[in-house]
Length: 444
Image (cartoon, rainbow, N blue to C red; front, side, top):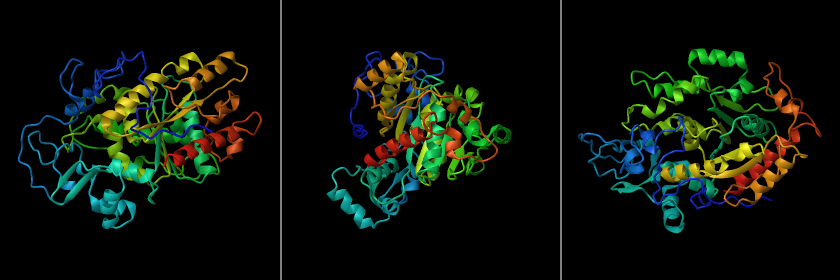
């Protein structure tokens, strides 16, 4: 039995000794990499070097000339939050639909306003409001959503998981797609796969190359969402046209939807740090995906975000959307070298957001039982208390996984795709999915 997931917000791991620490929650810069911005301030379009005295909180609110603010109304969506000199919005840096009042919380939870008022008084960990208006308290929607999930309130809330590793070729995408197929076909869950990896492997596995080319030519991929951030003259991204429903070639898995990727993301990623401000004067480039899809997320039981093998802005968009992350890795030295950095950076990113992104665990992939290196590294991962727990289920090295990556025009069963025991992976993926689901439900 794996240890229970520690609640987000707790200080789970000491920082990697190879990464410079800081007393400030602000990020002081990324490790040397041409794909990473100079500091977190670049995410908001404010190019500030590590020596700047700007704080991260300041960087997330754009500095603007004073303008006359409309009077605050009782509607949460009318909150004005962009003027540097206006004080009646406090620290509310996001758009109005990111905030909720007592009435909106009651609607989310399916209870009365009085029940919400009672929670505020009687439940010690109920989220604190970000401000008090004459009409009542205002809360962050994400904080309320997390609290409702944790306290098992009867509302449909999706589990959003990013899969990430800084090393390519570790079966990250194969594991993501297989889990989606098991969650749908075996466990009856409604699943959304969000492919953020420019290699588009998850998209090709679920749609096939011909369908992907058709969507890509029409601009119906996530690359268009990020392109729009750099084009102030018109928005072309269409969520409904981009969302592909009922994808995959597994007969039992009938409830998988997909937001497809594009090779164009390779070029787009390097340009995102300079994305201009949008209609709300404060479009943070790490929130582009979240703003686009947040209204759809809770239509699903589970959302799997396949992230690129880096910690660039596209990856941060996936993490911004996520409640959890999973690290598939081959248990060798090169594949596991970046795991402490992943944990440290995601902790810092979550702290910077004022939100929580919980590590689910590490999944050993392409495991070779007779390999001394694999067994040694796996034991090191298990015994390193700085790192997330290692799942008991190990995905062994097999040719079946390579064959399964090819999308077929005709349907096949899960067992036909991943092979039966003892040489196949069907039972392995089912057991891994059950382990993950137990952790997800156990955290609530």
